[in-house]
Structures are given as C-alpha cells and as structure tokens.
Image 1 (tube, rainbow, N blue to C red):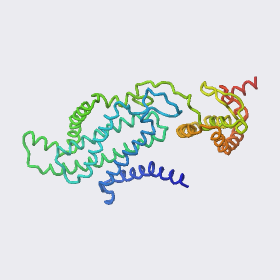
Image 2 (cartoon, rainbow, N blue to C red):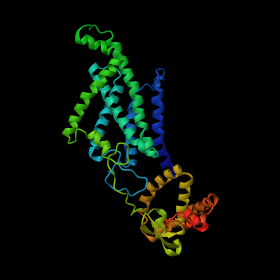
Image 3 (tube, helix red, strand yellow):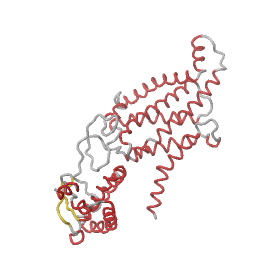
Image 4 (cartoon, rainbow, N blue to C red):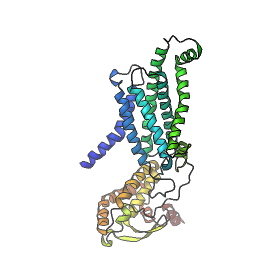
Length: 374
C-alpha cells in the first residue's frame, strides 16, 4: 500500500503538476481568460516547481556523469550540461527566472529602462530554453528528456503573455507623452510602437549578457562557458566529445545474481558469455533473456523503455544481493515471472526452446534454425 501511495504521489508531482500548469498557461494566453487565473502566484509556482522538476529531470538524464566517465548501465546517458561550465548555465538560468518573476509580480507600470532590461532577461531565458531543447532532441525516447521539455515550453508561454502585457502598458502610457522633438522625441515615438519595444529589448540583451559574462569571468568561468556547457558533453546534439567505451564488468542484474545462489535451488547449467565476460547461467536467466529478446524483436520501442527502466533500477538493487541466501530469495521471487515469460515465449515464438538454449552462447536463435535446416 505504501508503495502504491509513493508511486501515485511521484506520478502526480512529476507528471500531473507540469501538465496542470501547462494547461493554465495556455488558457492565460487568451485575452478573455478567466480573471481567477490572472494571478502572479501561478507564474511564481510555475517557475519554482518547474525549476525544481527540471533539476530532477536533468539528474535522471545523468547530470553528474561527465563525458569521460564510462557508463555502467545500458540506457544511461552522460550529462547534457558539462560540469565544469554548469555554473554559467545555472547562473544565467537563475537571472532569467528572476526577470520573468519580476515582470509578473510587479503589476503596475514599470520605468521604461527597467522594463526593457526585464524583457531582455526573459529573451535570454528563451534563448537558453531553445538551446537546451535542441541539446536534448537527440534522445527523445527517454521519459526524463520528454518531461524536461515541459518547463521550457511553459516559460515561453509565460514570456509571450507577460511581454505582451508589459508592452501594451508601456505603449499606452508613452503615447500620451509631450516629448515630440530631438532624440528623446524619436525614442518616444519608437517606444509607442510594439515593434520598437521588441527591438529595444533585444538590443538591451547585449549589454545585459556582457555584464553577466563579466560576473562569470570574475567567478573563474571562461567567456565562452555557456557554449562549452553544451559542447563539452557526449551523447547529445551539440556534444563534441567522444565518451570511453561502456564498462559492463559490474553489470550483474537480478537474474544473473540469482544464478549465484545455492546450486541445489537455482540449478546452474553452464558457463555463458555476456559482453565478453563469463557468467553462471541457469534456466531462469536464459528464459528471462529469451523473453527480452522476443520483446526486442516484436516491440522494439516498448523494449527500449522497459530495458532503460530495468537497467536504472535493477542494477542498484542487485548491489545489495551479496550473499547466496539473498540470491536464493531473488530466484524464488522471480519464479512467477519466469512462468509468465515461458508462457509468452510458447505463445508467440515458433521455436521457444531453441531461443532459450541459444542465450549467452554468443549466437542467435536464427543461427541454430539455419544449422538444423542445413
């Protein structure tokens, strides 16, 4: 019961909340949106919750695993944001969040220069969002990657609405200004038009970025650190580094560990090969692997999701199965699944026993079938 509650809560927090705020932000784009939704609180919650969940999603994508570290779990990724330059990314990200929150919570008309700088900061946030989205597009078949796109989308929705609101307030006020001649008159004329505000705010982004980069340099970051944050990575769109080969030498998952139990119970059959390493093979392990192979052949997309989940959670659990007695318990717990796997194999495979027998031999079921025909 506790497990159901935990998983339900996690689903609501990680999926339900982002979708809820996405719907709210889409509705608020329209001029005739309900007045009840026109509250800065929704923007603040979107930024706070979205930022926290984004960090969680980035952690799920391997935030702490640098490109030069061998991966030990199939389906894992190296960090999409390089650790050495991560401070630059998160510093600019923080400034962009502050700008959009101030643009939302200060509802009265702001001084023109202050408003232009806030809009420039929001522009900067959108540029970061676009870069991050492009960086992640290479691995869109991962749950964390998909969820990582939700907050940037909400930030853009908020940007459109808040910038439009601010420019409308500014142009309405400045159109009544008495300044008509000279440079100030020209500037006033420019700022009475929406296009002028977009242009001025874009230009203001340049000195804002210059100041931000100067601060970053004072903190020991390189001037091109924001670029390096994306390129000094592996596995992603902007990545320019080649990672070392994966290290699967410690990749003993639940079925493999179960094969290391007491021989009278788990009944080891032979030695097998997995990624070049010799392992103890029993019937249960071969059945599980044959089932996975069948799923991979018939439903490759589904297999990739299942395998990624299994690798991420099975490997840490397997590290606690360090005795023969614990391995025996895992073997017994896996028995019902073994029977289900066998039933599926006999239902959908024309030669299930051949598929089972060929596991961990370095050959495929088709090799044996072709040999028998020959």
